[in-house]
Length: 275
Image 1 (tube, rainbow, N blue to C red):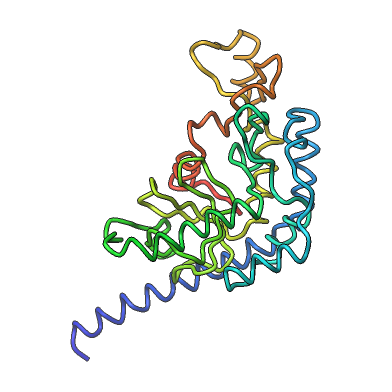
Image 2: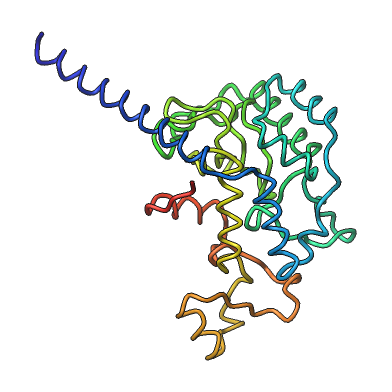
């Protein structure tokens, strides 16, 4: 066997081992997460004491026929944990200027979208694929490498949350070779790097509940609202600090990040783990 052939096999085997390791870690993380209903209940218990408007934002559960109709539309089966979450609530009430409050998002600031909104955004992707043949994907990438397909749009991405700017948290039903079906990803028009956030929605919500309980989801800090000496001592000790007289009117953020997508990307790239 010549040297080039041996080098090729080493690289190929290394990639295969990396994919196998990723699959093993995914299986471990997915089996370690509790049922999504338990994590959802933890978030609501936290919200009742800290942010009551969050519970008030929830819509009634989606019916089995509504979930089935959505699956029929996209031609794919949703992971059971995604179906289970919609059985608990059909997302949150979408913001309507002058008609609804600006409800805090249950996904650490970003909203849990109703199936009707998910359908609208999914149809947008279908239309974009049909009418944007000239868009190139050559500048797109995935983190971790190979976990998410480097595409502008994919009809197998189910956009369950958005930032009102064309970017989404999505359930990935067509992952890259190092990903898994059902993983939660970051995608969108402003995102050149597609990011695998967690191996499943249930893993992410379990982690998010822990972040809330640890005080890592709180009103944003700014120069206009400096910390008091007492709050600074609590912050230095790693304790949660609440600064708003009426927290429901505040800008709640995860770890004081300006945008959740950027915060999650930085967290994961610096070695943070979700699941």
